[in-house]
Image 1 (cartoon, one colour):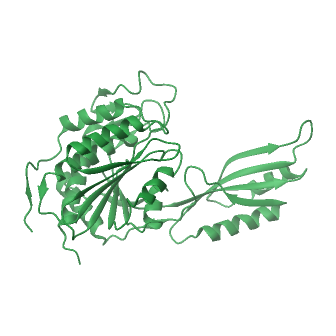
Image 2: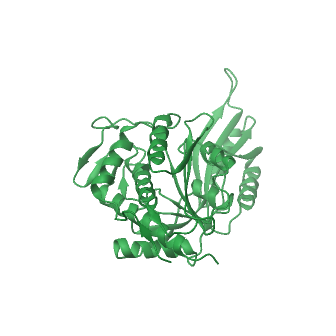
Image 3: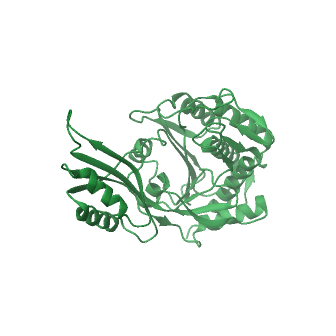
Length: 363
């Protein structure tokens, strides 16, 4: 297959820096993503990419877009999220005014994940000028990701995840780590009732096996009386092969042994999910490894990451999902930053991986 491009050149530092600065300067905390969504919508429209805003209950719109090369071939999904956390105390300046120093850019969302957004957008910009590829590239950007799965659910209902062969999430991992899977995760609500509930809850927490983490303990009582209800929030990561049902039953048995207990799942930011892993022989794993070898001169280490929306893409939508992105620090806190060079290199890895993946003949 012969590939032609109007102007295929690698993503450069100057353009990446300018786009990232623009993205940081548009505030997009969860629930206030609209301005950023409309900016990205206009950016993609300017490239001639099919793009639409998807209404998301309680949040700004999510985005779905498609760059179609041919009817046959594979479909690769680029995934990211639009929102950031709220600004926290401790910023030395305005968190929406990017500051550049010693190869880093400081700003709210710089690492999580506006560097990833900039990389995906610039990769799509390059791909939009190419001919000779087969299949299509889709883009899915969710709103509200830091607080809920409503953006994911809205995009799923819109059909954004149908008939997708594989996906790359641009969450920050650092250039030497390629997440080919995610651990599972569940947060349990364990409720004890009666005048002995505080003591029973205490006994329960002391008996928890390794791997369970107590997040909070709260007691409740009617006015001017002793506590008669105690709730314990417990988190558990799941490794490959562990089922949610088995972990639930294990924890429930322990709670009932301690006292009058009732167990349920917390279903807030992320519902309970099991672990998944994409096999090393998957075409997208190979494409990303080859892209890293070309751009970085080394292959990243294949690792498992913490649970996230990617678990839902892989397990609920059946999409083999990999995670790869820039390097930085301070996420969800003051003075968040990303290394500019790592963002540029990640953008070029996305570009090369897409070319290699869509160049493979469909089997």
